[in-house]
Length: 301
Image 1 (cartoon, rainbow, N blue to C red):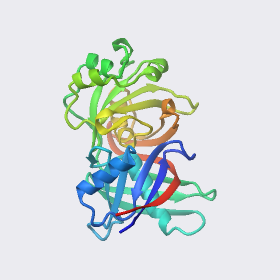
Image 2: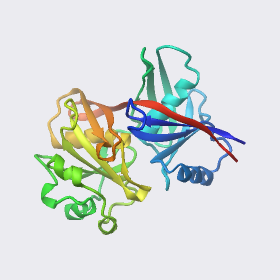
Image 3: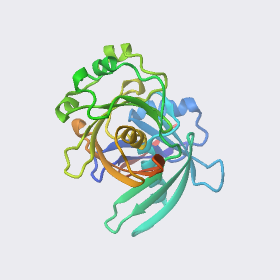
Image 4: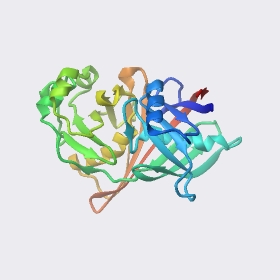
């Protein structure tokens, strides 16, 4: 049978920016191995497969694959897939729709809106609150793995940490934009760094950004996932508030940041991040972004 697919560029309002995503609209009958093969064929950072929900009260069960492995959760696939689902029967004009997506990490509530100009935006509430993990390798190994000088890692109270909100990342503060712009994975050093099993990638960041209202500029390297660099990483952004809270004083209430990513790749992305802090701990995290459709087609069997 032929299966319809769609691609979208996520965390952008412009085609050929942001992070590309492939969405297979009907994954029924496909084995895990077949899904993995299809994701490798698309060779995008992620491909999703929409399946009927396991609980009829929800909207869809979504499986997420990189070219090399299945993920229990990822941010730009959640945003893009939710928009693809909402748009399928949305009709004309502005709208707002509440979805519940089943992902392996748990239930993910997503609000999808289309404004009068036709722009599509989705914001999800993370199913898992971010928390610290054990096992971050030594700073020297990380510095060599991403081609950054050891002396350029860390600023103020920001230091390297291993954190997870469903999938683990190593967060690496870099002291200046120039050092971060020059960073790149060194595969030989990467293999020697002894990264913890299951780690998705290294999320390196600096305060400020290219755009005036940006709080943080980031890059994410994930060679083990088949992606030397990711243009926009929503699951890392969903974890990032824990890194900020561990490094700075955040009062109780809602904190909002814009995280930009992908500029060094020519795929500028904006991730809109919110975190609720209650009694000094993170109580909720929300990640939002725009997405634009790029192409549609059929997978032939």
